[in-house]
Image (cartoon, rainbow, N blue to C red; front, top):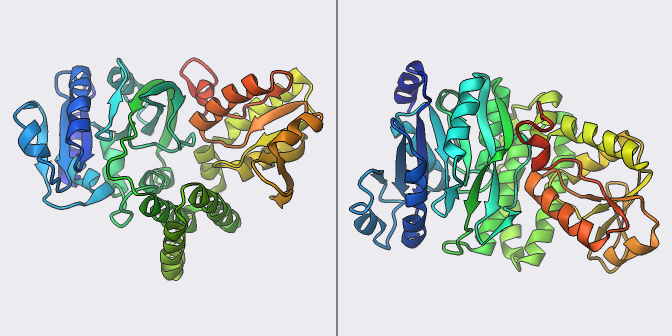
Length: 406
């Protein structure tokens, strides 16, 4: 991987060459639907690489003859997210475009990616907007401002190689966070660009709720245990456990939650010794704190806000609450589907129906995840038209020509 990518980077010319890397396993039909859209977006010098993780559904036999322009790599076994490293090792391009076998680029996405890297050689990766294929007005889950999501992400090959690519022990989930923390540590910038988007079908094939929750718990705890600044580490890990315990209850996956937590605890001592914490400023960039702070101040002044409520507890909710207090807003409560009032992060947690009684000036989506915040904002504007919707950060805030993140 190192030799080939370095050779590609050294030949960086007028047109940046893209290598699209798509891992697959037993999703023959999904891949057959995705590949034509990928191939339509390629230009001269680009390539598409499919890495087969030991499929048993005849993927290679059925699709290799139909898609002769694709480079096919047959692993014979399932390496999961680490198979992306194999694809990167075979890549001849200057920029790796990571996709899933059930995602497609929207028209113009590849050319826009090319432009970002040609304009700024300090960009290590571009985080792109991910919409749901069957509901394109809504977004896929995940996605902080300074983290890519693999169903539509672009990474400079030189940067990818320099930090060692994706972790090999994650199976799947949170591998992007590990990679992006390494990129930030190495001095690369990750820029979110809301005008560059992909569609994700979220296929149900190979999705097991207990396995998914186990990976989410174990891998996210490893990421924060290794990369979170010391003063923030414990809080982030507690918030991670809280959030995924809620996901486990919702998805009937408590067995997976317990398994993931046990796996992390068994490895925690070793992981702590391997800690490589980000600087506080880098952590702020990863969460998009500077954009959120400035946006909240503008909305506070424009709307004369004083009393606000937080709608739900999503990714980055503790940092969001800190920001609301920093800009001198009174956080009345967090509103969720609860029967009994609780407390969390020094805030009251109240039933959602209490919003009407609490005389709020504004409601804030309780997440710093760009797509989730944008979707929740639309829902809140419809449900509570008489209460201002206050959005700390979303994709519109990081669209080229709009408010810039960095």
